[in-house]
Amino acid sequence: MTTKNRPNFIFIVADDLGYADLGCYGGRDAVFGPVSPVLDRLAQDGLLFTQGYSNSPVCSPTRFGLMTARYQYRLRGAAEEPINSRSRGSTTLGLPPEHPTLPSLLKGAGYRTALIGKWHLGYPPTFGPLRSGYEEFFGPMSGGVDYFSHCDSAGRHDLWFGEEELADEGYLTDLLSRRAVDWVDRMAAGDAPFMLSLHYTAPHWPWETREDAGRAPAIKDNLFDLAGGNIHVYRRMIHHMDEGIGWIVEALRRNGQLDNTLIVFTSDNGGERFSDNWPLVGGKMDLTEGGIRVPWIAHWPAVIRPGGQSRQLCMSMDWSATMLDAAGVAAHPDFPLDGVSMLPVLRDAAHSFDRPLHWRMNHRGQRALRQGNWKYLRVDGNDYLFDIPADERERANQAKKQPERLAAMRQAWEDWNASMPPIPEDATVSLGYSYKDMPQR
Picture 1 (tube, one colour):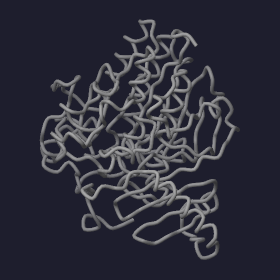
Picture 2 (tube, rainbow, N blue to C red):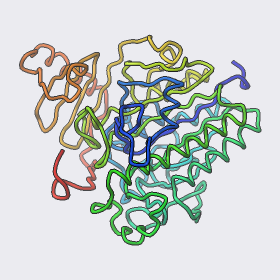
Picture 3 (cartoon, one colour):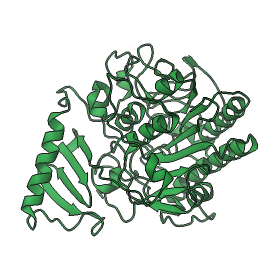
Picture 4 (cartoon, rainbow, N blue to C red):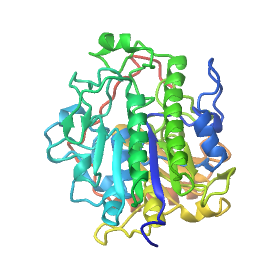
């Protein structure tokens, strides 16, 4: 495969998006109309996955898996649930620059690379996007920032171009979308293939639309915005992101790059307080389906037939492996991938293969294994067994009815866990709110 005919990649990651927040996943219209018409069209013209998962139910661990195409548990920084602002200056809590990544491997094979949006994988000077394979970076380093002041939860300004702070006025979702359009325009003028990570902060808190600049001063000391927001604001935030994705699709079309570009869209984890996860239960921080099953849309006119759906099991790191496979780029021999390429499924939506998926969380001692139709789950020391296609809400526990299956899956999880480093004793869990702030799910 020559450099010129390699595909381009746009890897779009929303933040805390629920499984059913998009119209193409059964989401309802908002008061202003369809919430996600652009993404719905990408799904209609591409391939929609109904059994796709994130590597974790919380943001930064998933991003470790996405970047490395390996289980995040292999790296110390990913044991934080999630990395928080107190890790500034740490030399251990981040993505080590020496570890191969999706962008570094593609860059080494002649790709142009950029991250526009959220990093959340450790702070300079030890860590940063430019140290892990990206040529260009624009966005916040931390987990959450105000959409207008661009300050993090500690009140620090957190918008960067490369490793220099950049004061740029405007609504963050739109700033990211416009930067992405500019980058696509510049890359399309060259001869090299390109890979863009477009990692939105939307629809993560604080709950602000384009019209809500006046709210920023009032919530600067509590970006969790516990007394703010509603489903109407939340859906509008998704719609702003969707509009921006439309600008990028149009830029690809205008530059003659749409057919040969694989666009992948997903969320870093399940939905938060205003999300629609129907029919799933749970959300962010949970290994129930609502915390880890997320939208997965793939659009690539040169390869994917329109209108397809797939029940193939997959997770975040599989899509990084897919992009490497599609580019003809091998993994570093010292860092074999845990991710599995979805390229055969992109070529034929009816294709399927066995794909066990494993998770663990320090929070509430959670563990999970999805294998075929079945899911083994542990929460707070209680073991459960669910037939997911028959019981997506995980209400009918089959553990007592099928003890042998439960025992076999529990042992399979134990065997996998033994191959991973243990959770460090000093790993932290950071919860933004609890049942004291709002009723439990």
